[in-house]
Length: 126
Image (cartoon, rainbow, N blue to C red):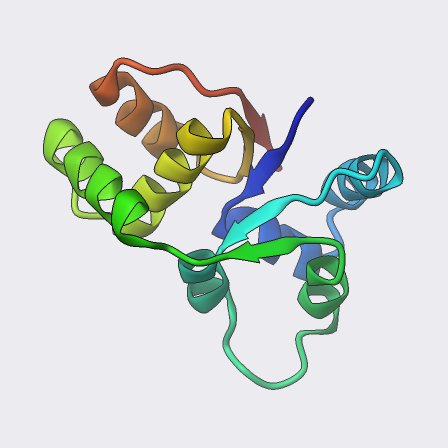
């Protein structure tokens, strides 16, 4: 696996200390793979105050900005899928751009977005 993208559900799973997510994260970081976290995913998951488990997880991740290219791709994905969830669309666009799999708690919405674009993404559900 080249890289992986965490969506909001993955960050929230970390905060809940989900053993599957924590084991996957450990395998990735041990293999020197830094999971990607789009900045909008962090914004959606972060609610202030101590979120120790998310903070710990993020130390091994790369927070990626959402530039114009990703923004346009996400907009196209929303239009094709008939949805307005730009965070999910950015996750899909980031995965496509980086040829990455996605860790998610909501595979249905991400699959719908990817299918609407005619692309396949590998999903790991937590």
